[in-house]
Length: 253
Image 1 (cartoon, rainbow, N blue to C red):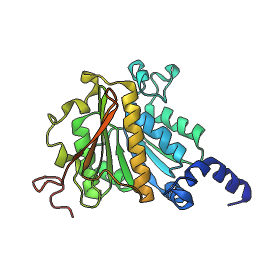
Image 2 (image 1 turned 90 degrees about the vertical axis):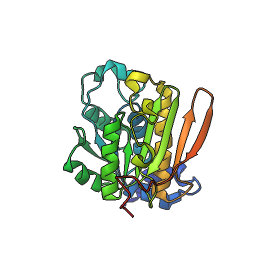
Image 3 (image 1 turned 45 degrees about the horizontal axis):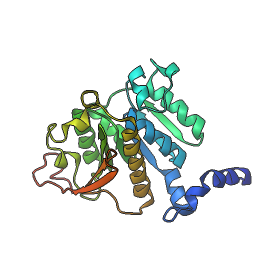
Image 4 (image 1 turned 60 degrees about the vertical axis):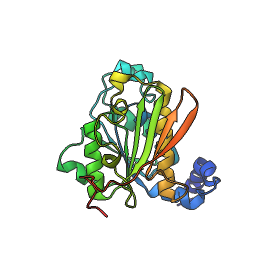
C-alpha cells in the first residue's frame, strides 16, 4: 500500500479507528469481511449505506424487485427517476459512488432452491431485510446448513425487531418464530404499514450488530430479541432460546 492510498485509507476511516473496540485491527477485519444482504427495501436501504461507509470488503446484494413510487417513503437510496429500475443495479451504483473500495456482487433474483446454499456459503454473515415469512424461513434454513450467522430485522408501524440467529449454537429463526402468526405483522409491511424512520432504526441496529460480530466485540443479540418502539422512545430485550423441537436446527451443533 503506497503512502497516498494509506493516507486516504486513514482519512476515510479514522473516526472508526478511534472508536474503542474497533481500532486499526477492527477496521482491517471489516475490510476483509464478506456480507450478504438479502432484501433492498426499507431496511436494506439503510443497511447498504452503513455497510459501504464502514468499509465492508465485499457485499452481495439480493433482490428481484424494481423501484416503485411507494418505495420512496422509506427506501432512501432511491430517487424518483429510479422508478422502474432494478433495485440491485441502483444500490450497486450507490455503493460505488460512496466507497469505490467495496466489491459488489449483484443477484437479481429471489433466493430459492439449492442455489441459495451455494450463495450463502460464499459469505461470512447474512443480513435478512426481507418482508416475507416464507422467504425468511428459507434464508434461515440455508444459514443453518452453512453455519452462517444470520442477522434478522423486521418492522411494523412504529416498532422494529432485531436479533442474531445461528451463531455459536444459539437459537435460529424457526426456534423463535414457529409460525407466521407469531408477530405476523413484522413480515408484511404492505398490510400493516410502516413508519419510514422505523426501517432506518432497525437497519442501523443490524449494521451495528454486524460490526460487533466481525470485530468480535460487545454483547451480541444471540438468544435475544431487541424490540424498538419509536412511538414511545423505548427499547426492550426479550430472551429467547434454542428449541429442542426445532425441525431446522435441532441436530446442528
